[in-house]
Every structure is written in C-alpha cells, then in structure tokens.
Amino acid sequence: MDTIYNANDQFMEKLSPSRFKLKKGIDKIFPIPVKNSVGTNSLKNSIIFINFEKPELQYKKFFKDPDSNPGSGIFIFMPVISERTFGFARKRLFDLFNIPNNSFIEYWVCKDILEHITQVEIVDPEKLIFAFGITKYIEDRVKPTIEKNLIRIYDLSSDEPQLVATHTISVDDMWVQSNKNFFIFNENEIYALDLNFNKISHPLVDFFEKKRKEHKDKEIPQVKDIAFHPTLPFAIIKEYGKNVSVITWNNETPQYFPLLRGSRIDRFSFSPDGKWFLFFASSPKPIKLLVTPVTDKKPYYLGKPILLAKSHVVPYERIIAWVNEPTSYVILGKDTLLVWDLSTVKIE
Image (cartoon, rainbow, N blue to C red; front, side):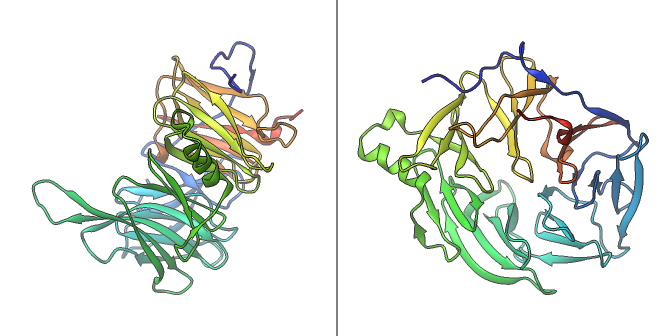
C-alpha cells in the first residue's frame, strides 16, 4: 500500500518561524491559557509568562511562593487545562495554577516515597478530574526496580486530592486517554477501558481483534504510541520500527493508511484545536519538522504537509509547546524563541 507522505521535502510548502531573542537561564517552557504566550519556571523560583505579541519578548511574573519551589524537579508538562487553569507534575507532586485567583495548589498525588508520577492526562477539565500514570518501585538502594505500574484517577476540585479509581497495568504496558476512555497497549495487544476501568469495545480495538481472528499477524501493527484526534474518528499509530499509520473508523469497516515508511517519527501531536497534526521526521537526515492540516475532505483526514524547519536533533518535550490563541507551535532555542503562527496559513 502506498504511503500518504514521503520524506522528500523538495516540493513542500514552507513556513518560517518568528524569532525572538530570549533572556539567559530559560531552559524549559510549557503551555498556558494566555494569548501569544508560553510559561516558564526557570527564573527566580517563579512562574513567568513570556509574551511574543510584540517584536521584543515581554516577561510577566505570574506567581511566586516563598514556601514552595515550583521551578525545581523533573517536570511533566501538559496541554492547557482550561481558560483559567494550567498545571504540571513533578515526581510525586502535581501543581495546579489558577490564573484569575493568582494562586496554586500543590497536590501530593504520590504520598509513598517509592511512587513517582510518570504521566498526566486531563479527563474532565471543568471538574478537574485527572488520570495519573504512577510507577511504584521496590525499595533497593543499589538498583531501582519497578514493582508495578498504576493508573489512578483523582478529583482535584478541592484542596486535597480525592482518589476516584485505580487500576494496575503491566510493567510493559503503555496507555493514553481519549474522550474519557483509556487505551492500554503493548507490542502484542491493545484494549480499551472506561472510567471505572471496565473493558469496553472500540472501533480501533476491534480493528486489531479482527486482524488476529483472520490470523493476519503480519498485518497487525505492533503499537508503540497512539495519538487520538480530539473529535474526529481517527488516530495516528506509531509502530515498533519505523512505521507510522493512520487508522480511521468513520465507516463500518476501519481503514488503515500508512503515513510514512522508512522514516522514524518523533514528537507527534495534534494542535489544541485539532486543526493540525505535527511531527518530526527523523530520517533521512536532516530531521524535518512537518505539520499537516486536518481535513475531512480526505479519507485519512490529513492534507498536504508543510515544512516548518530542518534540524540535527529532535527537541526535548520540555522545550516545545503548543499555544492555543492563536494556534502556534513554539520551540525554545539556546537564546531564541521560535514561533510558528499556524493561524496565518491558508488551507485549501
């Protein structure tokens, strides 16, 4: 089957970024619900909003708590939660920030010192329900060993975290959450759960099961990562190896479209408004940052790719961020902030 794209950028449309000179000392950024802005916690133990609406960057101190340290630790950043709130995790804690109140609450999600947060997903942004991936270790001072992995759902609408449900998964399992359903997968299987962690049917899961029943093992993608579109019936599947594909379930029979063969794909994601799909094509070199519009005019929902940049490395998650308004993609350089405003692109 032919692929939707190839890695040749010769005839691609190109979009250059706006470049802004950055203060020294900023080594991470994250999404915030503020127009033309990203956040950082790299400076002076504070949450700083960086605004790029004007030719020179504007810095606004949002929050500083002398009794806490929101700038320390290993962080797990996440998309904007709502127009009022944003947050991030760090090891055993989750910090939830409220912009109108100029405040934040520090939640001890992992009270056990042998537990660490590894993933955070927004389940209900208005009710402040979140799902946390948690790894529990066996106490061993010489070599940390994983005892088990957990998914825990917490209600963070009050000052203390309220545990809603918990589920144990295999050490080899990975998971994502989409439309209040959980998808647990490894290279051998995939299944779906509801918020009570009961098994449910889903067209994506049915696609895999059908292939197994037909004994078409060679045609079953060995799933390494999944990105579900927030509203449309399709997902991007990354397989072990180099294959990335689109699976759609808008018809009675799910369709499978190879996205790109022979090129490793990294850091792929949908824009907050669901209108763009972005990914790094890591081979052949140089690495290409590509974005494609999402369109219901194609059976696989993706339009022509646009080349944003070429690079020698794929950036870490802590130096990239989506901006909700206007829809933009931001990368933190050594002393530069790169901003691609996708709202300026005319989609055919």
